[in-house]
Image 1: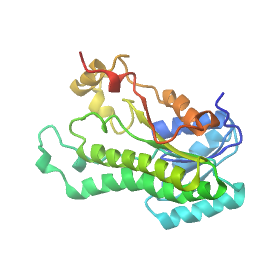
Image 2: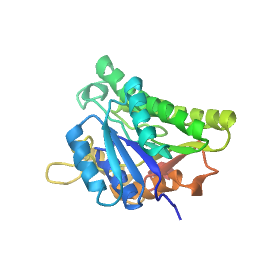
Image 3: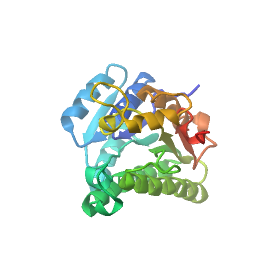
Length: 267
């Protein structure tokens, strides 16, 4: 139903747990998957896995450099001639932008806060501008961004991450409207909002060393009707849908993939 065969799909943040899972799921659908990132060793290893299923390639690039992204875009267009979809899975957090257990809001480190905002907001904005222009010129394309549960619900401690993801989600809607009003219905911009998935950055916050839930992990599960964390592969269906022509009349939405977390009042 969600036909993605031979689609040229550019993916940022592909070396993370969630991004890597998405890359593999797209390769299994026979998409041409082009992964971007800063760590060449990880990109090369991932691409070898992807090539088992479909044509794939990687480019080492800093997504916070528009100039570098433009050079990569030119190489992609020279080889494949188009970009059918862009998935912005890049994102992250830093200790100084988090309110620690023994800290208060007033202990936030400004430099770390700024870096988190750059990564989560500009790290989505710049690839969207560079590859969105390709889609505008070709008259068709889909951009899928990664939002967060921290946008609509206050998630304690992660101040910088929450603020930056809220800004990114606003930009997603803004760009969706701008592209449709100016250039017609061919280019769509949407986002998914993952619930709670165990990754490298949040594992220590959610799980103790023995694998049991931390106090924070228990609170999350208590407020998730499905009573578990998500599995990385469970994001694939939503992303495949938004990248495909099945979603051709959908733009400017944020699709939760959260086990019911965003719907539950706790009562």
